[in-house]
Image (cartoon, rainbow, N blue to C red; front, side):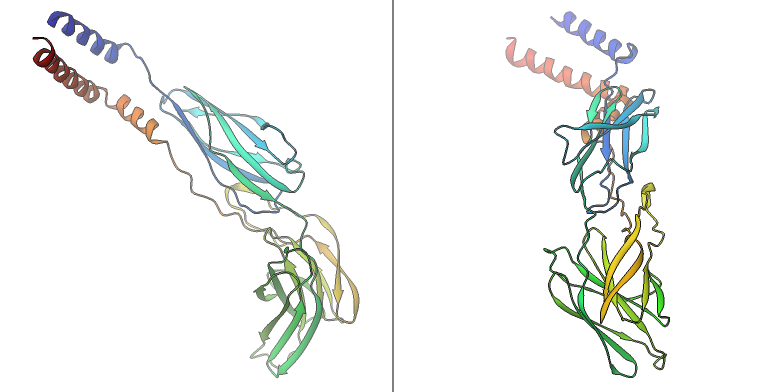
Length: 316
């Protein structure tokens, strides 16, 4: 029995050290993109790694939208360098073709085949209703007060933004925005603007409502103004693409109806989410493969203890 045990132990050690047997595995993690959003084109970052540093990893992106009964592949398979790397799934125009929740994941093919975590994106482009009952007063020489009532739009409105200019014709963008207030639908609201030290300057105002997705309403403001809705350049992290659809937006003005020409509302900046590394099992396997001699020594010690216990307590 003793000779047999030693023979088996030596054979196992030789197999472990010299046979090249690999217990490599593949892991993948998908980043959470901006949600909710009105962006119909953006990138989703993923990290795919293989414990075998010479193994090429291939990744396939998948999505399941409101109209999909099962996950659907999109884009061509992405081939990463040996051992894995980071890359992106490109969500292009047309992929998000209706409002609703979209699920995204990726499948990584390497030493093993594994599916990533699933991330959800709440997509909507409808937009809130245009505020009404606009009124402007000047309670003192250096202060303007704007009052309004948000539209009865079933909870779409979450804030109203105030824009100002000394010119009657001006653009509604980040450069002319002077105030904003968080407010719900079908609610009376007000905002003030302190124009000090330019108290003698005559200013013109307009307001727009926004929903949680970043969609903007039409504009309403001073009846003597002509405003243009501008989509400013939006810097998106992780390569996300800012979108906008040109068109006419009808905005109610105090004392009458006025046409506001421009493009859709500015899109929100995407905030990248944290991407974690390999899972604990993969890390443990990788450590064992990296420290083969230490692992073998531990294995031999454990086997010797087991044999001693067997001889001591069972073979009497």
